[in-house]
Length: 105
Image (tube, rainbow, N blue to C red):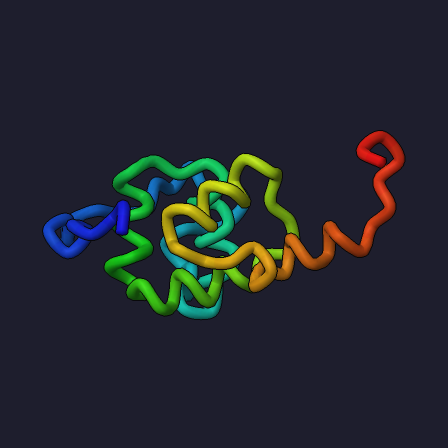
């Protein structure tokens, strides 16, 4: 796995700028898991990934990724490759297949 050494980075924290519209001091990290994981996938740096892996564990992050409703093609390919997830398991991929996209057909 790409992030196999995340346990060595226990001091890593999620940047507050990723959650700009929330009061970060009052966030329930477990209730907001899916939002936080999506923001890190879309805009995160290496330390942000280390932080979510330390908070939620590999299984928790993988499950949250599977529940994301939208990811662009680049981020979708990244999570499939790095977290070894089949694209058919991702909600954002199955939703994308249901849409008839005018310019991609």
